[in-house]
Image (tube, rainbow, N blue to C red; front, side, top):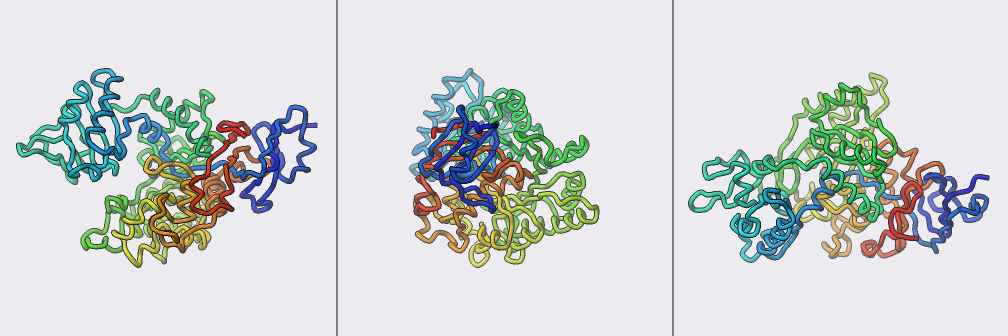
Length: 538
Ligand SMILES: [Zn+2]
């Protein structure tokens, strides 16, 4: 008799498997699910060595996937100096000083999150404060919105920025009355300093991700789609190194930046290549900018800015050429599209590429649009029709709602973050966080998608555009099966089904039954990865 290694019994299992949505027990052997059903069905699998966990009726779900995350960037950033929402610039400088004392002279101090709107007078800070607290180290702190940088004199010197440096196109080097740089760089002036900062070493990346993996487990995540990479393949190299060392405790789908499309094609790389811990995803392409900077490419101008229609990063003909080339080589595309015009163009291109796939007798690839933040009513149903995955991030809806109402306005904002419309049209949803832009806890995303409210309750009891709220089961599906489907792995994971990998989470309360606002209080009590308890306890 072959016994199970472990049995979770007396659970409330939501399986995300339509053949058997609810069950009370699951048995695991060698990292895989061997049986799902009621307690009696597990009796034959219970041997002397079998670990039996009595869950006392607690809710068990398939472990979550994050279908859009910048994990390496997030992992590196969390090691930096955190000055998020500090009440004064002096407090930011004090944190910089504390870090600088731990570093050798000349080493960069990186950090971010300051928001001058919270400070007395809302003035921009200056380099003097950082010069005084970190005289031996170059310092660069990002603003919370990521569009400005606060630096000290050493950083300016290393970047070669002086009174005579002209402002770059689309950027500002802030200057005092004498024309001297003050230590604040805006927009396109930011890269002048970034380009002077040496990239993190491979060892630093590996160490940062190694530290980050248990935090993903603590959030209930066992699979991620790494949304992009550097042209030097920083993320892919890091994940490979951890995989070689047997330390990659996540199932990673790695996308490739479009700058490397030619290389990927020339070595014959195809989407799906790899194994159950590390697999090649798609080619990451940007179609436009973002809402915050009002560079999302729009069919009509922004409210109150009759000349601003946003920015198309690539024209449609060029996009078609790139996507066709990728698809013909077996590489799916994962296209960042925020504005309604960007989304229309991407769907036009994908309609054409679907035709090409048919003509060439190729299996349709799992092309995806990232964000789909606003779509024209004519375009929303096209994702389903073209079988294009909507990879969306529910926390963006509640974070951006005020900006979306202000800059996009009625009536078109009704097509923004329109997850219920997408779902009703039959589009496949895959949910993610876009961390470090937003925190990566799926429970926060579930709360946002179900309530369309922020943690503080805004904008009120029925939420922002309540017709776009989703049911808990739909959201859970998008964070599990939907993301696994996007990765081409729906036969191996994404639901609690016999034969699939044993990745589960145990929650502290039943999010199907609790009041929607209380989803926020839910804890991840335990996470199983490949049948092993990697976080918490049962
Ligand atoms: Zn992203």
